Structure formats: C-alpha cells, structure tokens
Length: 345
Image (cartoon, rainbow, N blue to C red; front, side, top):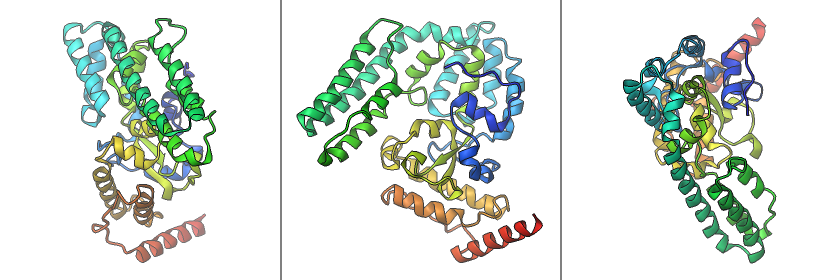
C-alpha cells in the first residue's frame, strides 16, 4: 500500500500513516501515557523513544542522501532498537563503510535473493505446524484448512511476482472456516499458530524482502519508528477490550504491531521474558506517578496489575512494593485531581 504524503508530520498522525497503528481516536484515553519518558517496553524490554522526538527525526531524515547519512542518523537511536532492527542496522553500518555514497535500498537488494529463500523456509515451517494441529480436528475441517495451507505453499514456491504470499490474506482466510462446537479450542490454537508467520518485526529475512522495494527514506523511518511509543490494548478491541487507560499499555510500535490480536498467553510463548519486562515497565510507571507525571491516573498500576494477571492466566504477577500509595489512597488522589480539574473547567 502506498502511504499518503503528509504536509505536516505530527506525533498524532505519524504512527497512523507510517506504521498502520492508530495513534488517537480509539486510543485517546492513552494520551497521558504517551507523554511519559524513559519507559521500558513491556513486551520487548527496550527503552521507548518518546513521540516528541519525531519532529526532529523527520527534519534530519530529510537531509539523508547517502547510506552513510542514514547510518549516522540511526546511530543516535541504536540503544533503543529492537532485535531485528538492530541486526539490520549492523548490516547497514558495514555496507556504509564500503559504500558510503550508495543508498540503503541497494544494500537490501544485494542480499534479497538469499533472504527470500530463507523467508520461504520460515513460512513453510509455520504452515507445517498448522498442518500438524489439524490432525486433532474432524476430517472435514482439517481438509478445509489443509486446502488453504496447500495454496499458500504453492504461492510461496511460485516464482511469479504477480502471485505473492500474503500473511494477512491467509489469516483472513482462516476466518472463513467455521469449526464444529467441540473443535473451537483447537481451531483457536491453529489461528494463534498462524500468527507466527514471519513479518518484518520478527524476521530479518522478511524485513529485507519487504523493504528492498522501498526507498532509503522509508527504510530509515521504519528502523526508527519500531521503537517509538504506541498505545496497546491488553484485551484487544476486536475481542471486546475497552478503550480506557486501564486496558492500555505504552509499548514500542514494533512490539504492538507484532502481537496484533494474539492472546497474551500466546505472545508470552514467543517472548518468555515479558513478565520480567512488565515489572520494569510498572516500576517506570510508578516513578512517573511519584514525579506527578500521571496525575489523575494514580490507580493505573493497580488496574494493570489485575488485568495482566487475568489475561496471562496468572503468569504475570507484578509487585507494587515501590508504590507509595495504597489502592485506596490512589483512588482518593485520582478522584480529588479529577474533581478539581472539572471545577476549573
């Protein structure tokens, strides 16, 4: 999809247009979280890049003409990078040493063929996992799923540039299948397994293949934006999750996008360090509350603790030992702040 050209980049429209993640509207209640700084991503453990850096980044990005320019700009954000982005930055850095006046798109095109082969193998492995799970279904339902995975394999192995494998198309096609009542849990597991098909957030090979068709500007922007702040629903909106701060986390855009509508229990299987990162996240939040940077939301740590415990089936147990407010005290402070705010209004 070709992104719209914006006359003016703002923190509010940046994620929406360049990363397909809504920034306001449905997540407007998360605005207090967006303003926080020094927050650890609860999914990936990196320090989130504050959205107020976007304007300066875009200004410098407009000046990048060569591979060396791009590497110099990205070097300021190296410590914030997620694993795939960090690997790509290392590749770009080596390329720029030898070809400083070239551009990063040419770098990706040099390694695209090899990465495409590896990407196809990654995709096949996930489809194999999906097929194995169909053995637990009735023959009729299993055959329907096998027909779709077979078609995917045909597309993956095809050399045609017009008939390409689309992860989203396969995921959508699974929704067309209606399993029997006693098969719903297994079918849900199959859909969750399909979510692990590689993307540019999870696979270096997928990144190379996708962005070898993009300009240097888009490539640099993509590396940067993966680590910027994004509002994430703990319970996905598509599954009935509320658009309230008590259902929101401030995550990196990359961590948010890769989870999609994956149940938290499934995401934990992919990233087992999430409980550890969540504790660091809540400690960062507590620090910001104590610094009066989250006024009117003092009960947020308690709400998040309970919701994460429930949605992770007890695997995420947060400690609020560093929080100086009891739940009752936090509720009173929140109520007083909101009451005074309404009076001023």
